[in-house]
Length: 302
Image (cartoon, rainbow, N blue to C red):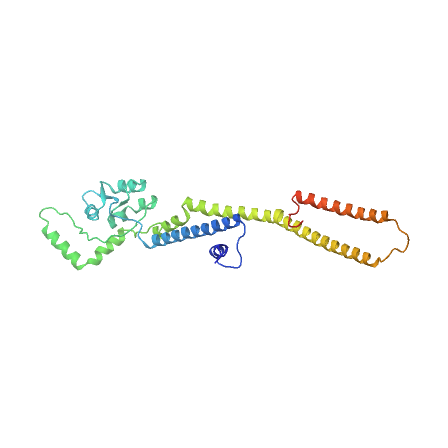
């Protein structure tokens, strides 16, 4: 397999055509390598976006999490191997989360429902529900054993009343952005946000348009003009060869018909005719040589 054939198979994936000039081959190699690079980058971005859309975006271990001082959430954060920051008020913890001082906050479901108005005002969301058993109790004074016995018996026999009380005083939690998950947002950021990808895509598109414009201008301004001149010169040289051949044939036929002079003739007349023909032929050769020196024609043409 020849080198040009191998080049064509690598660039065009087909063997009947190939770039001829050095710059055409260089452009073809740059074009295919650029296309491979762009395709690889796009494939990597799509793969990363799909991975981000199916994986959890928030990692609890090692993150800075806020929790109420002495609460069950504080102990849970320590068990999760998180950097727990203690707060004395829920409002202060939520404001710190909104400012970005902490990565997240561990708050009881009922407590965060009580502060739902702050959740709706600040740009925060509930990322994950953690199932963790918590025991709720009531502090009673001394000598309240009968009240304790009645309360336990009532809760044991009427649990629905407890949940109905919760339902009356609590509002269901709903994120303002539940329609679009955080994983989907992360995937969108991977595809549409990076400036390097935008610069690469728009830069490549600009290069393609510029090269296309240059190719069109060169095709109409230079290539077609050269083709027209070459075709015109080819037709002219062909016509010249035909005329020269016809002229020689005519002269040969005329000389063959002349067997003897029909009248007395002067030798000077024939010499003058030959001289004129030689002068014309010399002038024609000088003009052709001048065109060759000017670069209009090549030596092979002459």
